[in-house]
Length: 446
Image (cartoon, rainbow, N blue to C red; front, side, top):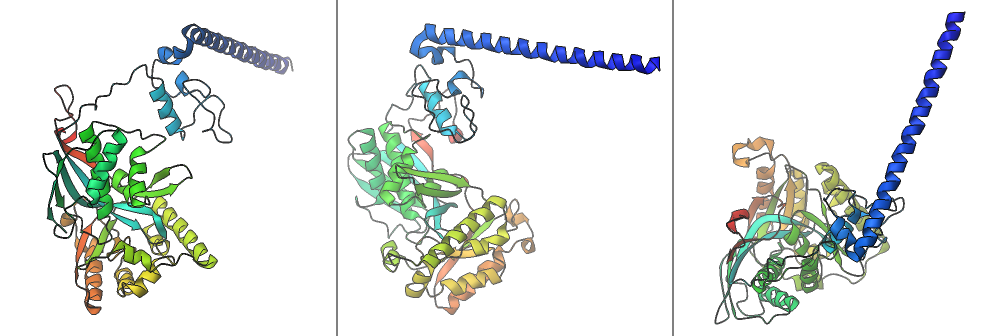
C-alpha cells in the first residue's frame, strides 16, 4: 500500500515539475521575443524611413519587409479573411514582389542601352477552347521568329507559312506592336527593317496576329532599351491585350501554357492553368483563310440565359478537368453554345462532323480553334519522343486520319499538323549588342 502511495507522489511531483518547466520556458521565450521587437522598433526609429531597407538581411519568408504595415507604401488591401495581420501569406506574391522592389536602396537599369538588332521567338496559340470565348487560350508548339533591326529605310520581308499573304506595310501588326513599345518608352520610333520567318499558319485561327503583336512589343522594348513592371501590373499584357481587344491569345503567347484572362475593371489579368502531361494537339488546318471579322460577324450580341448557364458550366468543367489532369472529361468541357454553332452553320460546315470523327477515333476532345477555320483535337498517351514510342500507345495517328477523311467528305482541302502545347511563351533569342557578358551568360548566349 505504501509503495502505491510513493508512486503516486512521484508521479504528482513529475507533473508539477513539468508544468513549472513549461511555464518558465514560455516566459523566457516571450521575454526574448519582446526584447527583439523593441530592438527592431528602436532600430527603425533611429534609421527613419529607410530603416526597412538598411535592416534587411535576407529574403526569408519572415523578413521585416514582408510584414504588413511595414515598408514603403505598404497596404493591408491584399489581405484576405483569416490572413495574419502581420505576415504576408504565400498567395500574396504580387504584394511581396512590390515590397521587395520598393525596399531596394537602388535599382540598376541594366537594360538602358538601346540595341541595334533583336530576334524574338513567339508561339502560336489556340483561343476559346470551346466555351472560353475571348478569355481562355493555350500556347501551341509552332513558332515564328521575327528580327527587327535599325535601318535607314522601312522594309518588311517574310518567308515561310503565309509569307505571301501578310501585309508588308505599316498596317502589319508587328509594326503596331513596335510602335506601341516606343510610345510606352517615350522615345521616337526610328526607321526599322523587319524580317519574319513564319511557321504559324496565317489567318487560320492559330493566333498569328497575336504573335505579331507580342513579337513587335518585345522587339520594340529591347531596341528602345526599356523594361516594364510585371508583378501587380503585367504591363506587357496590358499593351498587347489593348491592341488585340482580348487576352485569350496574347496571354499564352506571352507566358506559355493554358491561360485564363479577364479584365478586372482596372486592368487585364491572367493566370496559368495546369496542362496535363502526355497531351498532344492534332489540328486540321484548311487551305483557306478565315477572317476574324467575318467569324465575329455571324455572332449575336445577346444569348439566352440557358445558353449562358451552359457555357459557364462547361468552362468550369474544362478548367476542373485540366487542373486534375482528367483528360476523359475534356470532351464535355469544350462544348459551347456561344460561338461554335453559329460559325458552323454560317462558315464551317465540316466543324461538328469533324469533332465527332476525332472523338470517335479516340481524341479526348475537339473544338474550333479561335475564330477558325482550324479544328483542334487533343489526344493522350504521348511519352518522351513520340518517334521512339509505339504508335498503338497513342491515338494521334488514328485521330489525324479520321479528321482528314472527314475533310475529304466535305470537300475541304487542308493538312494535318501534330504537335503539343508549349509551356514557354515568347522570348528573345538573339540581340546586338548581347545581354550576356564575360561574367554572366544567358540562355542561348543572348
